[in-house]
Length: 243
Ligand code: ADP
Ligand code: CDP
Image (cartoon, protein in one colour):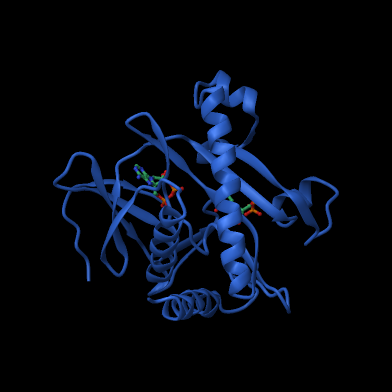
């Protein structure tokens, strides 16, 4: 099942990153661990990594076909992908189409309120500091991005949001919000990390039921069935779009 070629470089909360025989490529392995509330709640569920891998591999490929540069190179097995090694930018870029989660706690939004135009916000990725919110001036002052790169990240995030929102609409799901991470390769900003049910909120269009990590976070039911359902819908979409 595993195909780990090199030394373990980094073990994060849900993925392990390995060196490969090529200096500019890494192996990202999606583990079965799931965490919430900055690691305060954690569990392991056999097969969870495969669901997030399947979603991520599909979305990276889909975004590339729609003109977004990503780190995804190829799948190795059912939970591992070879990616371009990026110099990661420690920012969590969040796009929101509806109010949910932290912004409902922090601001007077109603849960589910439509946000049009979508809202982009950014957290500084630092577990020890609790991933604090950061603004554009702070991003530039910390030399994380240049003003031009900031614009590029914003435009790319909005583009990704449009592509993914339209896709999920076809599946009968609402893309409520999602988090992405970028890095640099040869000075170019590239989408990295993952795009999965761990990093987005998805609601059923009819019932508003969650199909994402909120099912785990808030004990809303069987999150593995929810993840399985999203992957099943993606696979049905793939089957119906095969040339
Ligand atoms: P976390 O670090 O939040 O616990 P993960 O378990 O997902 O998260 O670990 C994956 C780590 O690998 C993240 O820190 C992410 O920023 C980093 N990463 C993702 N894609 C790449 C890439 N292409 N090159 C280098 N690092 C990457
Ligand atoms: O998850 P929480 O409600 O604490 O934070 P949020 O800011 O409302 O999260 C917005 C979106 O980003 C949700 O889809 C989260 O799952 C995702 N996110 C993430 O994937 N990783 C983080 N460290 C923070 C948020």
